[in-house]
Image (cartoon, rainbow, N blue to C red):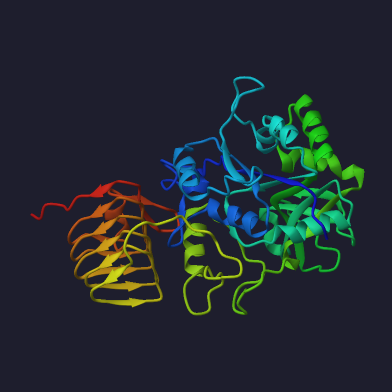
Length: 408
């Protein structure tokens, strides 16, 4: 099906408070993920792989890290004017307020829609790990002659109470919403599952502009809570079943419709573990649908000696003599002699000095773990020197330095 002119907005202003301390100095979309990515790279890769090249990235909190990442790694063709990934901070055109919600973020940038004059406006979040061919969702939107289409993910009914549930009829037309209901309404054709909103939307341009104007007059600022429910009575609001989205190159072992909200430390950690093993739930190395990484200008990894199992090792890492298990080691990390790393995420340019041992630890960028340190083995001791998540995972914030205690 021929696709109309499309403009995309990526909502990338999230504070990510539940990811603290990884978000102490950066917004949630800017948090490093995997061996060489940031969380935002997944949604941007989905757009580029779907041949959608006009993208505005709306930022707000602690945005400098994200701005620099996009500037360095997401430059599209300067020759074709409609090929761009442009960062847009709050312009405060409507007054002194920052973005008050997801819908208000787009409303404050209505001028960009008017200037670009698309037929469809796509609004996606920037906080999730997944692959999606957005062209298939556009096809569904056009086939249904929809005013708005909401990406919906089927989940077991017993899990749906944690989400916003979408009620649909047999044609996937949206007939209602339930916000974290005790008894979720199941899918029409599957009583064991319910549709939950992914926070990803496709709008007809004029429908969106009218809906945003109405919401603004009522001082309503959110897509999920206000704008989308306001369009249900038009009988032109539809749910796109994410489980029907087909991605070429997906391995048989991968979880069908893999999607993770990595908004907590435990979810972030578990999503990393999903990538490991010879039968991963989510395989990063799909050449037919690549996740476009940040560029790294430096040497390849150098492993002088080590016992490394089920781990991801990024470029520029130097491993002198270490035991590494079930871990993700990002670029430029130095691991010295007799170091043990088990179930860990070690971020860029950290240094693990001789003889240290880490278990279930996230080490943020630019840290030095001093000689002989043991982290992740005694929670009572760890509380005084790093952040302990309720899941038990220890996190060392960006740029901190663990000083070796003086032996008595």
